[in-house]
Image 1 (cartoon, rainbow, N blue to C red):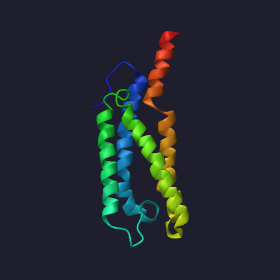
Image 2 (cartoon, rainbow, N blue to C red):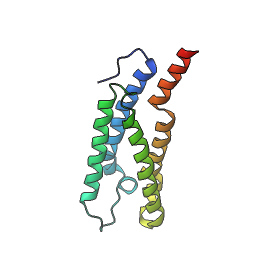
Image 3 (tube, rainbow, N blue to C red):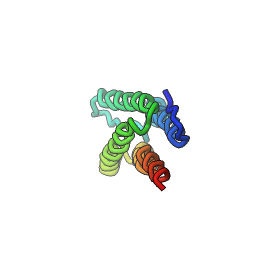
Image 4 (cartoon, rainbow, N blue to C red):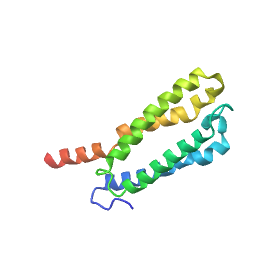
Length: 138
């Protein structure tokens, strides 16, 4: 389940991917604790939409666990998590600003996703592998 290669940084990244899997599952429980900041419902929304979002996050968590075996070969999972977090976060930002009853999301899931995208951009297995190649070449 985890990376077993010689690069300690990639072993650490493998654990990070497991942490990310847990992170993507936390909204399932957190929405019960702080629904205003994590649940988008105004009474008019089709109740199937939150379940579809949960299914996407569960799927992403499963892919993170599967990808933890070799973070470099499975970097597309990280790329997808980064890009989808940016797109999803910006769409939520737009609606959190536009819909006054959704402003709590500006302090909840919106910054959470945008910060996640930044972390995934800078802490990326592709960068780790590139640094290793450069160190070996010099």
